[in-house]
Length: 305
Image (cartoon, rainbow, N blue to C red; front, side):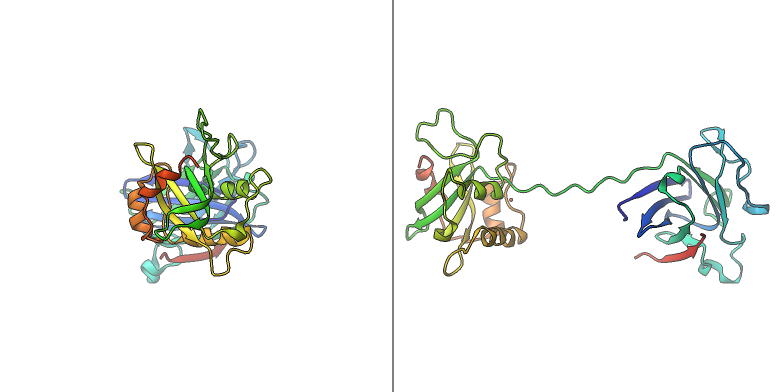
């Protein structure tokens, strides 16, 4: 869906559809999409919320006489004829006849989305009880901005330079998400208020305060704490042969790993994640505690400009 748009909705027994008015590459369009039922769209009407002045209308069966919005008479700024009533020899193949999932795209002769606050549809051969509609739609919905996916957060990360034969940490830097109180063993922790995403852990590791060097890393290990407060390894990332070249390569390795499956957040079950991710399954999680203290539709197009 285009970023700049307004969405109108209409629903009665036997028929529902939406009208999405939008701007694309400097031009303006309306997509009429039937969600349930069917109708032959014969004309469309539209206008802003200023109800003063002469109202546009079409003659004969394409008029919108008697249409109201919240009980008030509507003043239309423009009215565009699309087709005559009746399906004729084309039947359901008529260009303006829409059924479930069909979309009719119209090009609109307007200068701004602000020119349309009200949208009307005159349709016949509808699947409503009356067989025709004069719909008036106001108060368009503003489409919600898609939410950016949240980066996984971790309670503890080990930047490992040395490991024992069984894969347990032997030398490197542990960083916690929050400084313990009291911090009896002077454990490193992210600065107060820092979100514990991997990017923030990495930035802190290479900062002047910590002085970490990514080229010396063999593996990076991620932990969550269980209900007893013991750290449990959830997964790890191994450095390539020859080690990491720089932080960009580390982040790329992390992105590659996390693209394969959903990685842990604070609400995830660490043990399930170990089974799902299966990154280096031979490494034992229980041994890390000793080091605590050191993520079809059819489309029609019409130009009504």
